[in-house]
Image (cartoon, rainbow, N blue to C red; front, top):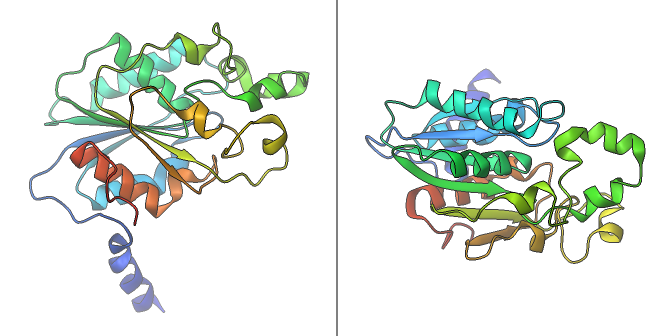
Length: 237
């Protein structure tokens, strides 16, 4: 049984585009979403390691810290991890994508590579607005989570457009019953496909849910494709 497990593990990189590039050694900074931890990005981190990247899986207080503090946590992690990297890429899930965008709006890191956002509430979330009528839910979301609505004064609307290479992977599968009632159009249960968009930014839509999109091998393949080439073409057949 042990030999069988080791054989399966050895073959696992073949599940997505993970053949190491000789001498690549570039860094990927991963940032998790609201109410999650670096553990939620662990599978994607491993697939990126198989592809030859150095990984910094950043944790931050997503439910209790104010947004500027979350951004400062990311900035400190980047300063500590990546000075010797030839390029530094960023991949963020949900709120983590907004933390990345604010950081890159304030800082222009040398050797900046590409950025991929997974299920980001770029235009806010109608689901969060729906939860706004439930006081207990607002408390559970925390100060930043409760500001992820679609109003022009909400957090997503305050972020400037990217002036770097960025791609978005949105989900279109919802397994919770409220999504179709609260969110117009295809959605991942939390964010609609349209709300994930940023004008002028290439986007790939996968049939995945908001909470598990980062664990999909197709997501990993698409992320690696974008980090290497700047597009999603041919990432998912």
